[in-house]
Image (cartoon, rainbow, N blue to C red; front, side, top):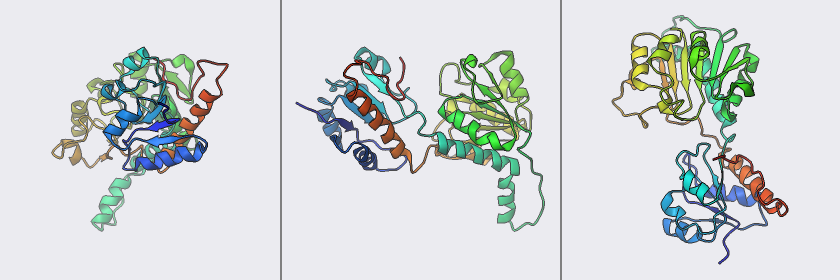
Length: 323
């Protein structure tokens, strides 16, 4: 039984039909067979003979049917939801969607920073009330922006900050690698605390790991300057929600822009909804009309690399996830 060159699983994302993803792959690989499994039964049947599969998720139950699977192209940047240990045991190469979100999330962060800098939310409130009354605003120039996480998204944020005359601090697990910021430090310790103390805008763009879970806790929030703004486009649990609510109620930070929360979705009766100085978007920073096109670029390139690797049994793939 011969499977398709690329099998696409049925789950889409961002409210966009997964058929658009299939069409984008077909446009880039016109000489290949690209199949969409539209139902759970079709997935179970098609994956038995597929060597290259792409989709948002792949659970252990479906993986049991994947007898010929060699490559799984995850259509999310994060892969923590995948059975990575079992995939590794089976010798399956995993890639992710790193970089797909860079431009749009970078723009989202920049918009959030400018919103709080020029206090557009205050102007909007006064417009609704038809009040012609001046209010205090800030300048971004000369501010210090700390970006936690210097992957594709963190780098995209830094790139968009360059024209604004800000000082940037990058935080990453291996600070020796450097980065696109004026200085780079590691997680925790004295350097991290000192960076928080001089931060005006704290941008969280890191994966959720044991190191980053609860990273922004009561201690971190009280170390930040009271005029600082928190922007979280990482994962909700990177921030201690109770500590954040306490900081907001006590005026210990100027505000927060939250694209992710803990819990998520945020319950209707949660107090975070009630703060005028909190911007909440429903995990929407990743939305872009270019999402499937960028994913398809990665898939098509990796299919070509695999086909051209007759003399190289283990080719390096774009966005290959290391165990």
